[in-house]
Image 1: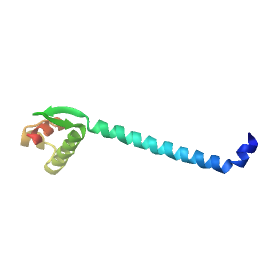
Image 2 (image 1 turned 60 degrees about the horizontal axis):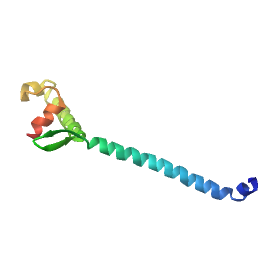
Image 3 (image 1 turned 135 degrees about the vertical axis):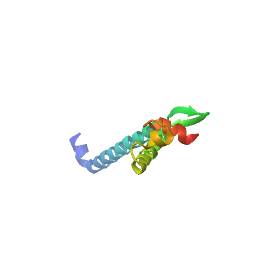
Image 4 (image 1 turned 30 degrees about the horizontal axis):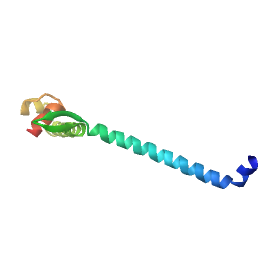
Amino acid sequence: MIKVLQKYKMYVLVVAGVLIMISFLMADAIRQLTQYSIENERVYNIDGSKVSRSDLNQAAIHLEGLKRALGNEMPKTTFGLDDDATQWQLAASG
């Protein structure tokens, strides 16, 4: 067995290296696929249209930008909304 490994050691190293590279690539691909499905998961419906987590995250980013631009008290005094991305999503989609 040792003579066989010594004779074909370069081929064994190449095959082992390729398997290691494939395993790292597959782990990253699986992680990206599961993250994509979580972000596009339906959180709730507004008038029959789907609202996903990524939509809710985007609404939170917009709300934070408005708060920074207009001051922290902006949502309650300007739009009558609480400091909540869900309410901002509801107001922005309607």
